[in-house]
Amino acid sequence: MRLSQIGLRITYLNQIRWPHNFRYYAPALGFLMFAVGVNSSEKDFLEAFKRPTAIFAGYVAQFVVKPLIGFFFGTISMTIFGLPTSLGAGTMLASCISGAQLSNYATFLTDPPMAPLSIV
Image: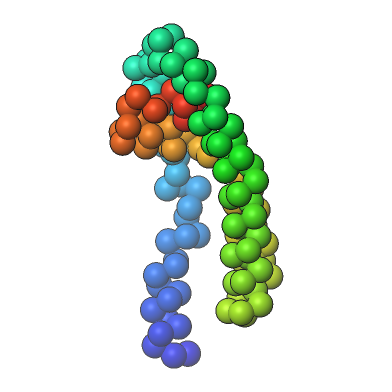
C-alpha cells in the first residue's frame, strides 16, 4: 500500500462515524429557522409579496436553473474527469434538492430585509 493511500484512509476514517457527528444538526437548523421566523413580522411578508418578480425569479432559479447546472456538472464529471457514475448521479440529485433552512439564516445574516423572501 502506498503512503498516499494510507493517508487517505486515515483522513476518511472519521466518515465511518458520521451519524454520531450530526446528532445536533437537525435541532440546530430548527433553532435557526425559528430565529429567522421570530425576527420577521407580518409587514416583512407583505413587503415580500409586493415583489412577485423576485419570488418568481427565486423559484425559477431553485427548480429550473439549479437542476440544469447540476445535470451539467454531473455529466462533465463523468465524461471529462472520469469520475464514477455514482458521484455524477449524486451531483445531479443533490442539485435537485431545494434550499435548506440554513439558506434562510444565511440570507437573514447578509441582507435582513430580504429574509422573508427566502422563507416565501
